[in-house]
Image (cartoon, rainbow, N blue to C red):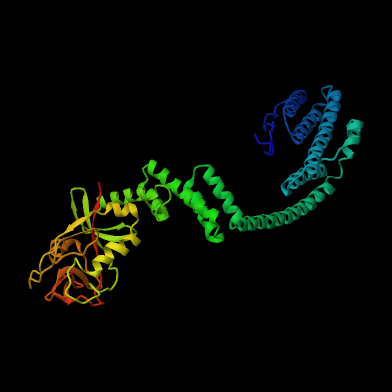
Length: 440
């Protein structure tokens, strides 16, 4: 049963006093009084004890003419007012303890509730000094300011609420200030260096190189750049060991041009694996350029440059020329090869025996066969690999001669082969080289 739940056990019995003699009625009242005494002594709240002692006294008074109840009546009065005084003192001490140790407005409101309970109870049930032990009565009288204490607690609760509100405001301001300071610090180079050091120590090389890259971008520090390269390589190594080839490929690709350790060889190995797994007609990256897969044969793959290298004459002299003697062949297998493919990539490009056949329509001689790493397709090869070749925004040269000895065939934008050709000095035709790459 809850402490604040009201209890009322009524032992009065209607109709049972009829036909009873005065002595029997007195006996009945006496027994009822005893039962109320028993109930009172089992109550926890002093207010309930007070109530049932009071009822016991009322029934004892009715039994008085026939029983010698005076000593018991005096004892009950002492118990009643003693209980009332002791209960008041105990509650008062509890309320004072809560008030003195209050940390929140809720604590003060709890103390206020107890003081209010004392005040409203003693208004209806005052102490009677002659029935109360002098020492207990004197102590109870000290607790007679319950109304003032009730009002004080309400005031203290309001003050505490205002204090907490101010404290909360200052804490919020301090938190925001700390947050802003932290955000500012996270943008500093010192923070990035600290973070990079933590990540590198914990083996999180992917995060470490990202932090060093950020530091380098902001400071242009040579040391930061070297750290960036070191940990990007370590991230690639770790990814390769765990089977994450995409991350390994991306990181090797970023540092391979700098020829850091064996990054070029490992990057090319992954490049060749990607080429090997790419279907004919699909686009693939090789040497930082996009290519189209045209053919696959016995561990090697034929690639055609996806986007043209730009408009250039087939030969700058304008004289009778073949693929063998052309300036475009010399450029592709010279400066272009050396400038755009590092050693490991050049080693992956096969030396191809380039068959040079006469123009299929005009029978113009094509000259001798050559051995090249980079070459242009012929009319026959365009027809052979037409499905893998896509439409372009410009025309591009072939190595098959045109109708005249100083002209060359080309491919129109819609993939149509123009055997008649253009003069080799034309500067509007673009170049799309082809290569055979070993994927063994």
